[in-house]
Image (cartoon, rainbow, N blue to C red; front, side, top):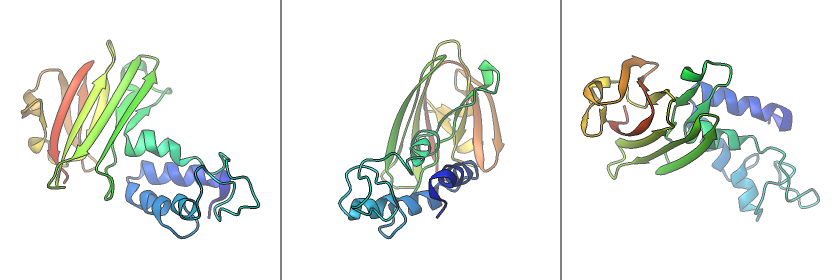
Length: 189
């Protein structure tokens, strides 16, 4: 295992490299080391050690770094304070098998940022709802490699109001938007 110090960097590396599937599997497996193992051993909070030893603390934030992934990876809300204000909000949801939907609200300096996604019944398409606060801009990385298949508000994304720029990068459709509410629909390809 990476231990308490190194685990954050494992989480960040997997998140940044689009390997949410690996992180989800590690967190949910029922053998040690994992959160799933802690739950299987009866834990109701994070334990001090991966093996959930009852001799150690049973309510401990050690190894809690996956919380960052819940917001910035699975939920998709990333705020990069090193970037200019007009470029710091990024929405990069990472849907994984075994999770049907998420909803994240994040209070940024600019205001509340919302990202909620749900897989459709067929499991092959995604509905992504995003809210960007007044005066802000954001880049939304829709998990679909073909911009022509992405829709916003029922229209092709390239022709939807509020869309400032659309391009393909890294197997996703990148959409730059101004403030407002957006509803994207796309196949998970």
